[in-house]
Amino acid sequence: LQSGHHFYLSLVEKFQPEKGKLLDVGAGGGGLLVAAKERGWSPTGYDVEGKITQLASKQWKLPYVFGDFTKIKWNPGSFDAVTLHQVLEHLKSPVSYLKCIHKLLKPGGVLFLGVPNIGSLSSRLKFFLEKAGLRKKRVGAYYDTHHHLWYFTPQTLAKVLKAQGFDIVH
Image 1 (cartoon, rainbow, N blue to C red):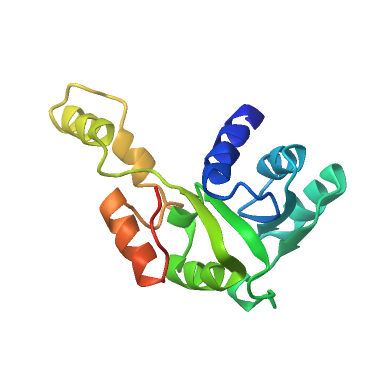
Image 2: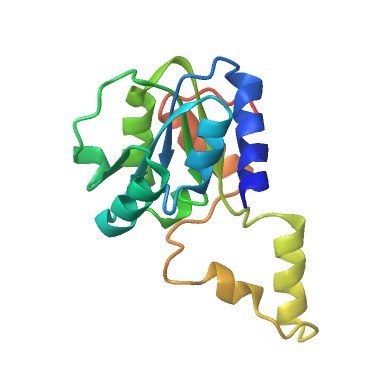
């Protein structure tokens, strides 16, 4: 997984070459944090659940924060980059997170998002094959899970981000 994390961070670094403070929202076990530290970032992890964050914080000796993201007393403009990899689609209120993140980023800071694209050619083809009975594995079951609360296309994601004050750079 760390090679994937390094790839995501290389994308962040295209737009934020100054490696400063990075917040990984939905940090879980800390893989992206470890990769960020290896690349020269000063990373902090956030996750909603305290037990995982405490274990990962001890294991990796990296700072973690947990609790209700929008109620934490964050310092405005304190991060150069924020990452949400496969997280936004799980949040009950993604807009409240994005508003908070917009305030957390320094001017010129970068938000990296990775979400499933419900409108991708691959996704549409799989749904079509399932409905036609030509494919037995149900991709719809993946998108229909109880833990995916929101579905995005590049267009809908851009609209949500722009409404919260973000500029889309890629």
